[in-house]
Length: 121
Image (cartoon, rainbow, N blue to C red; front, side, top):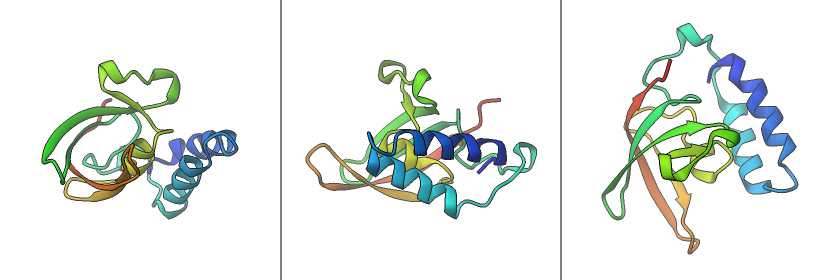
């Protein structure tokens, strides 16, 4: 994780702890496990804020593409997903080939696998 993003994301997760406890816990867990890097030393294939991500739902084999953004910039019609969603919080820090378990609307766990990562600079 980019060091300058870690504090901002921690503050964001703590700010929504009462309103979005599951997402807050997930994001804080990701931050606590993260290895922090300066932006210029971060591997370019690692999901960071503003990255463009291609991923697949392993159950349906459906491919998706999105950009990971802060809540104020989220727009599902433009494929910009908030870091304060279960998918967004789960994707941060992943690389191609890595997966997350994501609960769908029916509460079933789906496996989402990152295919591509492009850093937006």
